[in-house]
Length: 368
Image 1 (cartoon, one colour):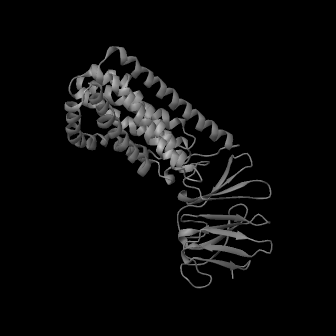
Image 2 (cartoon, helix red, strand yellow):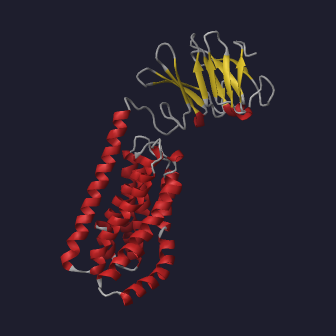
Image 3 (tube, one colour):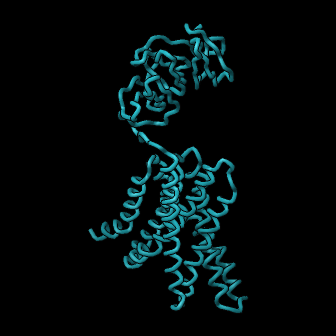
């Protein structure tokens, strides 16, 4: 029982923080991506350990040549600790977690940064507990875990700002690496020096990093709220939930129709965003869909759907009943390859973005 309690004391705090962050998102990220980020954060310790030994040789050379005892400690704090850990964390976030396609909102970068840091910090706590050092694990939970999370949040914030910036400023990516490295090094330096008068510096850096991280998180959430007049939906398959919706259209009454792509259905919402009805399921028959990507409504309220992986266009009534379907897979006129968009003009002519065939097709109102 005691080993289980010790292991739980090392793991549970990180899991609670992950759950809390997940609930704070407007558009929660897939659990698989969060767990993968957590795991990659934990795996950071492996290359850090491997590279620590050659870097320790550099440290010993500096130690023997240094005139002051401060220089070796400074090199250790920044080179073998801050630069090493933050660089691998940076690689995880910039090349996996914070790829733009994984981000629904800028706050996701903050979440991924904290989750990667929790993976690293949790594995360190497990190492302390496995050696029977419960006090060491507890002290890390109070100090090192918060600094890791704060630095991860700052790093994730700037990487996400770069992902959502129309100009892709390299300044954001530079800040994402430089700021955590500097703060991490300043935090570790007094601890490694073990000079009692300088220990308050570590505490001040911890408080400064936490305040900075919280302010950045609040800033990005406030910015998201200002940009959005209303938000409807979340990840899922129930009414009012979505999985990668790709198109939306409005009828004359202001009702919304959504191509709920990965749920292979259409959803109708009221002007207030309340779920009214859902149509369709996975399949190839009339009224069934495979990854619908395009959607439009004509003046009479009839609905036209680009049924992408069925390589066809479907026409529905305003109540979702199947009226007609046109097309099949191919490259001839009237055939489609993965159509992703559809539009209708005032004369009833239908225009299709025939994506896989790299062309636009115009059909008559009868689909000819």
